[in-house]
Image 1 (spheres, rainbow, N blue to C red):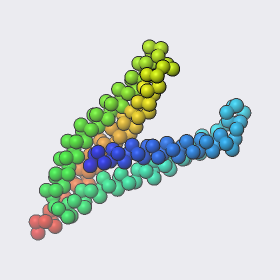
Image 2: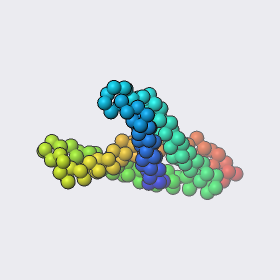
Image 3: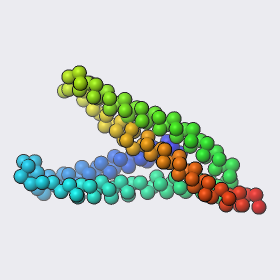
Image 4: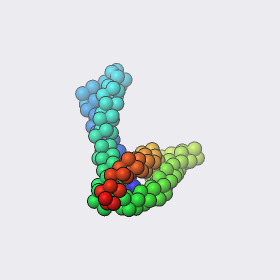
Length: 169
């Protein structure tokens, strides 16, 4: 489950970024004075676009995280929920470490090249791509797995008595 949620979150970041790019392009097209600093961009609209896009993308992952232990508990019982929780905690912890460290390494590789005056080289351009890929890893998916693990466990604890009542009685 952590791998699925991670893929959903990284895809959501890409879709939200696309919405932001569309808004910035729209502003540049409608107000060319932005490029020459004659007019100011509409920062509030950009913040609104980012907020709305983020919330629209978040609901899917949140719904899956909340529904999974409930559906599994009703259909297969408490033992299946325990299996889900154990699997999610074990894989989630290691995946979160991996995402945070990998994203940080890609970011630091780019910074290292810039410090060593390698800007403009082919390697630096590749490091920039790595940094772009790594940012959602370390800033979104890695930290979000902490919340996913906590939410799965909280939902399971809240509904455990219902699961036991369904399967024991």
